[in-house]
Every structure is written in structure tokens, then in C-alpha cells.
Length: 244
Ligand SMILES: Nc1ncnc2c1ncn2[C@@H]1O[C@H](COP(=O)(O)OP(=O)(O)O)[C@@H](O)[C@H]1O
Ligand SMILES: CC(C)(COP(=O)(O)O)[C@@H](O)C(=O)NCCC(=O)O
Ligand SMILES: [K+]
Image 1: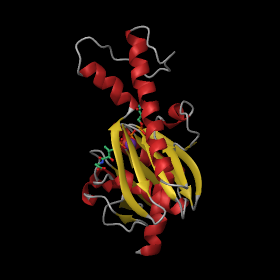
Image 2 (image 1 turned 90 degrees about the horizontal axis):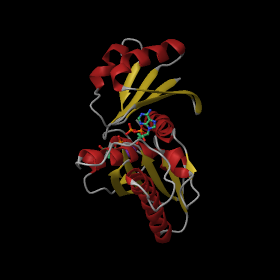
Image 3 (image 1 turned 120 degrees about the horizontal axis):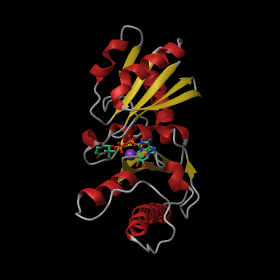
């Protein structure tokens, strides 16, 4: 039994797996990391490894205290991955994006895959049918867009995520909600159309904190799975064990 931990720039997500079976997930803040991991280990005494992917300022030292009880594995660029990396700067490719690409390669063999992770940032990652990671895109996420409009202007209020009534905003708040939400929805649909036009068989996976909210607003029907990074961490760790 293992626990996978995804340290993003907004929050920490964790999930317990027995083989390929997902037993339970957790979401918490960086400030309460230790307490939450302790509770998970207490609840699931059969856990033997903690597998972490971190793109934020949480380093291996934060998990030192657990090393007496269990193995702690921080996924790094030096691990074995099931794809060939064709990114121009492979060492600076986000480890979360590597794990997403890895999960998609292992779970959806012999096809083109596009993984869209709508978290703090919206990332797009493309792994082709020959298992070559080709790259993608990084854009601001939903909450980041609301905050950027407020932080970099004198007059715009900080609003919280809300469904726009129409694409024609009739007020300041209506305009902001339309710009942020519809803007991102059109952006994602635009990227999907572009990828679909460029290759025949493609699976598209939408994940991240805003996946559910966005999926039902897209023109394209795609598969939303908020736990895809945690599941990919489990797959990537199993792959590493087999290939080490
Ligand atoms: N309780 C919450 N706290 C913060 N963000 C949330 C929460 N619930 C949903 N979200 C949405 O999740 C997004 C962040 O997604 P997440 O996958 O947690 O990011 P990251 O992996 O970068 O930490 C934000 O854009 C926000 O709209
Ligand atoms: C783009 C990211 C900030 C996304 O982080 P997240 O939204 O998951 O918190 C992260 O993948 C990262 O730091 N990437 C490094 C640059 C790159 O991937 O090329
Ligand atoms: K992301």
C-alpha cells in the first residue's frame, strides 16, 4: 500500500492506493502537511511508501520525519519514465507534467494523448502515439486570472469563481466572470480543436482543481478526472520499481 502526494502551487492532494485500487483521497494546505500525512499513515497502517511530486516550495526535508517508518520517494527527472522526452529544456520541465505524461502513456497505450491540468496554472502536455513527449503550454489558471485582474489594476475587484450569465457581460462583475471563465473555456476548446486537427486518434484528459467546473462548459466532450495526477504517480512509481 502506498500514499501518493501531489504538491501543487495552491494545495496538496494525496491518495492511498492498494495496487491499482484507489482507496481514499485528501486535500490540504502546505501549512498542515505533517499533521495530515501523520493521520493518513495512522489510518492506513499498511502504507510502506510515500511517493511525492512537488512543484512548490515543499522539499524532501519536509518528509524526513516519516523516513523512520516508511520509504519516501520524491519523483525526480532522474527517475525512469515510459516516454522519450523531446522537450527543448527537459531539466526545467515541471515534475507534475512529467508524471501526467507518464500516467497517460502507461494508462492509454498506442494513441496520442493530451493532458490538460487546470490547477494554479493550466498546463497542456502532449505525448504522441510513439510515446514521445512533445511539449505543450502553460497558461494562468482560473483563480490566477481573477487575482491578476485585481492585482494589476486600480479598479477591478477580486471576485470568486462564478458561472457567467452570458458571454456579454452586463456589469463589471459580469464582464470579469465572462472574461475569466468563458475566456478559459474558449481557450481550452481552441487548443483541443487544434490538437484534434493535427492528429487522428487522440485521448484528452482534463484534470486539476477546476476540471469538473470546466468540463461541463466545454464544447468538446472530454473525460474529466480530478485524481489523474495522483493515479499517474501510482503508475509512475510502479513503473520505476519494474525498471530500476
Ligand atoms: N478550496 C480550494 N482552494 C483553492 N482552490 C480551489 C479550491 N477548490 C477549488 N479550487 C480551484 O482549484 C484551482 C487550483 O487547483 P489545484 O489542482 O489544487 O492546483 P495546484 O495543483 O496548482 O495546487 C484554483 O484555480 C481554484 O479555482
Ligand atoms: C507550470 C507549473 C508551474 C504548473 O504548476 P501547478 O499549476 O500544477 O501548480 C509547473 O509545472 C512548473 O513549475 N513547471 C516548470 C516549467 C515547465 O514545465 O516548463
Ligand atoms: K497545472
